[in-house]
Length: 329
Image (cartoon, rainbow, N blue to C red; front, side):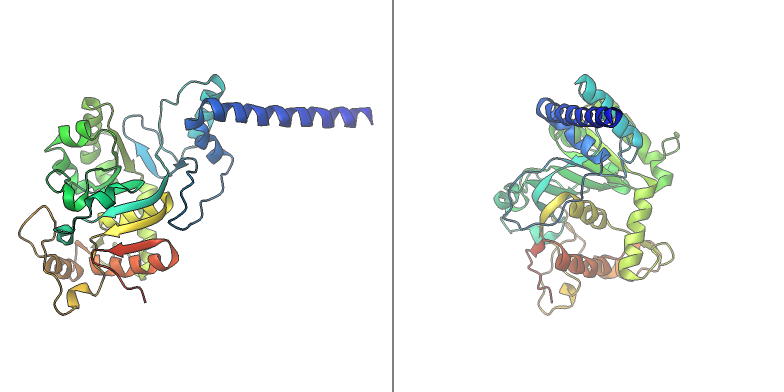
């Protein structure tokens, strides 16, 4: 009987000690606490109304590798490293992809943004997402000034590197998430795009650049097949940067406001607004580009198909579309 009581006392004391340890860690080193929560299976975040403003802890997002530190957030090593570093109260030298957003603004690259004058509204959002090399300088009145997350295609990385000081020095608080196939992102010296990014973080050590893992790319392909019934590779399709942006944003944001994105029927509507494919480039008409890609036998983005999926997601999650407005039936 005495042995049983002694054992219970030891368990109780251990539990209390562990609880107090975690409490102290959170107070002293709150920035690293979310990593520990993930190790113990932090419950998933549920969607909540836009009016909800309470800030929750940073969430760690899996399937993205920090280019500078080589840290893969899907690794068990992250949890072990976090616990060890928390015990010593030292800062985490390897930073996984962590985002915590209430209302997100996803700003389309579409010419629909020209003349909208919603820049100030966009800049009020808790997280502002942009895609590829879409600029803000010179377009602030319509698209805003701030960028917090920029999702970039592997094919657009050279466009960023044409003006590296702007993207990686002036905007060094921006988080870059680069997606691309394994052949371009491999780390064995043969990944052309990965090599570019590695050189970039050597020159700009404060740049926050993450790349998708091969497993994450496969996951996004799987979502496409689940939602459309079509195999991406067999159908000759390439996913768009918007696709990868939505998948990550739905995991990171409690509400999403999408600016300047047209729906799947817009280009067939009588009297639709003819605009450039990009707000920062003249030339290609948006609807012409969409039809060209949608019907390309190989190598096209299925923009129209993707918009149908986005509309479906908007019915389940807190997503609204404006400029132009979408009517979700």
